[in-house]
Amino acid sequence: MAHRKAGGSTDNGRDSRPNYLGVKRFGGQKVQVGDILIRQRGAKFKPGENTKRTKDDTIMALADGTVQFVTKKVKDFTGRLKKKTFVRVQNK
Image (cartoon, rainbow, N blue to C red; front, side, top):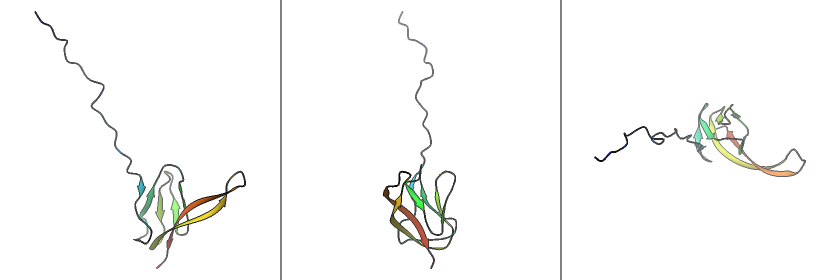
C-alpha cells in the first residue's frame, strides 16, 4: 500500500508589510503644515528651514510653502567638508 506523509505546516506563507520609504513631496511642490516630505532610515536627507526630523527619521513640514532641496558643504565629525542634502520649505 502506498503511503504519503501527512501534510504539515510549511515555513513559507508569510510576508512582512513593506515600509513605503522614499521622497513623498518633490522640489517645487506645495505643502501644508504636517505633510510628510521624506520617509527614510537614517539621515540621508537633513531637515532644513521649516522642517523637522521625527524619531523615525521622517522629515515633515512645519509651515505652508514650497519644497526645496538644497546641497551644502558641511563639516563632518573628522573636520572634512562633505556635501549634504537639506530639505526646506520656503514660505509663500
